[in-house]
Image (cartoon, rainbow, N blue to C red; front, side):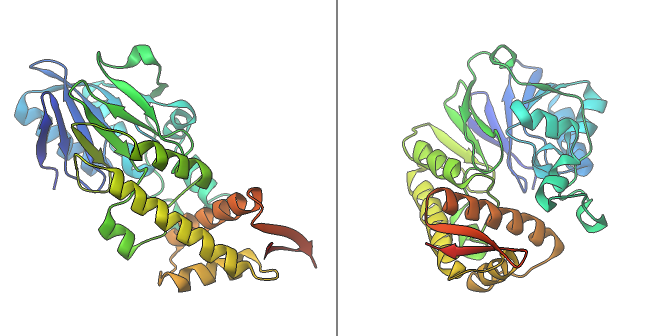
Length: 292
């Protein structure tokens, strides 16, 4: 873990629970794409950089989930590096309590206020095109989170963040977090058409061919959407639908999963209602979802 792997040219990635990109600006200066999950990840990255004699000048974030921004505070304090994040992701990075609050839908209780969902704040700036290293391009990859992006380096290596999961992960945990289902499907369509020397998803193996995995992710989303549609029946509460989804996909509920999968199921319900496949009504002061 935290092994530095050469991708192409000046582009590398670091094997970690959420892969981290590294690009050499010169013999001594580098930038990172994401920062790992916590202070310990930051220490390991700093050790790697020191061993190579590299100075960290900036961190470019793909999005603001805690497992991608958790190392920022430590690295920024240690190196003085800049941190850039796109759009609303910058606000979540500067104020990370927003993540568990958003996921839970209120003030998060103690079991949700830990490093898995709640990173330490850092001083991030909103990403603009002028902030990018020469030759970098930004790919808009919304769906998993608000304004998630990917990056293509001058070596034609594309970092895809969390827009898709690996095939093994889909087998074990088919329901992964999505904020906007329609946007996620559109992003997968876009990714299927991309070409690159190498694709580096955060939670899947690096590969020169991404279309098949993108298609597999799309099929999984559609299967989940169909399952939720059928679970709605003539009118079910959110809690009943959530339990049905967890049972259907053999998932175990924890406090964290209640926040993550619960938020995701709500996003599926919004997507299905907006597309006309289900309806909603208030009955006896309960919000009920029903198949059209």
